[in-house]
Image 1 (cartoon, rainbow, N blue to C red):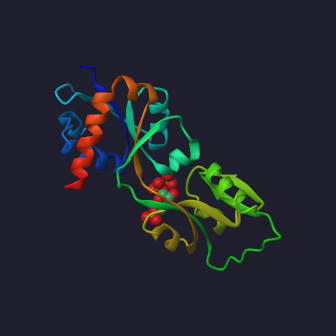
Image 2 (cartoon, helix red, strand yellow):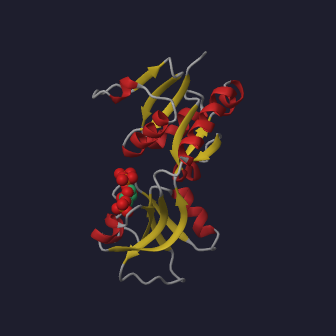
Image 3 (cartoon, rainbow, N blue to C red):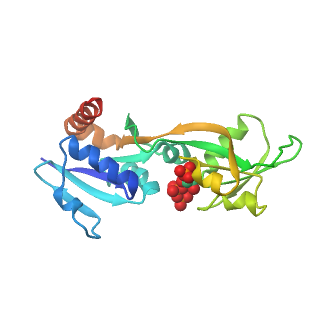
Length: 209
Ligand code: PRP
């Protein structure tokens, strides 16, 4: 049988996801070795894993380079890839928030300057409130923007809240809760349906234990 190609997000979340897949019956001993390889396969379990940048998982899956993968709901909301969302894995839980300096007072008659890595999520959120905003797209260290006066607020992921606290910022509004989702390529879902359905069932069974 053809191997199931699985794109995993490189990093802490990916390690947890691999842990879940391993327990669900899809181990891959070579991935557990200390090395810098990016592709690993275990023909006995029928899987080939590869590590990709978390924000790229959805691209691999959408274009069929991976049959399935795991991506944060933040990425799915931001890029709206044409994939199936199969399951909420309950891992990587955090929330998308608006945060500001503790002393920031908003005024509705000013355009709000919003720094973020997630321009679409921010635009949708404020447009639903008919609020005029100026989006400043950044690629990381978003917390610095309000401190240096580059923006009034940020729209970013908050997990423990530590990063905000240590930078004198506070969460003001929660936009949406976020967690890791299992996603599938639409064509693979049809042609490798049995393999994908079996994996989903085993993951669900493992999560219920
Ligand atoms: C996210 C986010 C915050 C931090 C929040 O960054 O952008 O900086 O985590 O976590 P906390 O509430 O537990 O402090 P991430 O680690 O994803 O790195 P990045 O900004 O470089 O993508």
